Length: 112
Length: 113
Image (tube, rainbow over all chains, first blue to last red; front, side):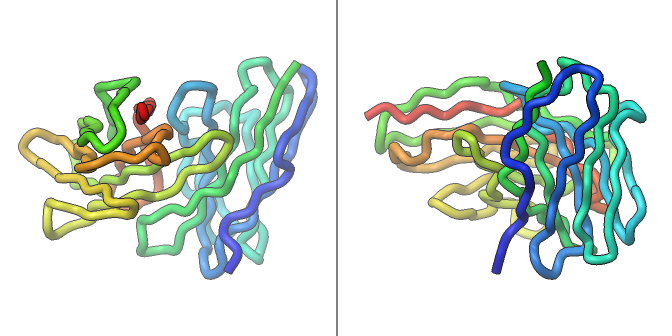
């Protein structure tokens, strides 16, 4: 049983560019959450998707947007990249009614 | 909203010694509590969780934690650590919808041979 998978593993972009990160949830899970983990910090909640809609959002600007597909996979889009967007982006999946979140390995984004 | 404070940013401990990693939380509603471990260049792995019931929770790799509602704490303990326990440990809290997790800043555990 595959766990949560994320792609790509690493990504290098320049300021002002746009990036798309992808996540496939654990089999049987229908909810996807995205987190940003800056170096030396704990993960910060970006948003959560359920039934193809954004259900909850953390304190992140509108440059951060997402999407969930009918197969429950999800994308995170970041526009107008800033140097401060450099971080590890983690995807976590869960099943409604169960609060345990399973995390993927993350995508390391570097903005130059 | 909830918040988490991990009181120690770094904890060095000798191999086979006991360890306690401290976590305090703040919330105006009932919460669920979690401890995750992160090895270098990897995602987070769940160690244990408190949802309800017994306040002493046992997890994987010999770790356990105790929920103390009056002190709003959820400290992680292990009676005897191994070199392989060297990693970053994160305490997290969510409300009972589980829609949003709040993480602490992490505690770096280093086990010294």
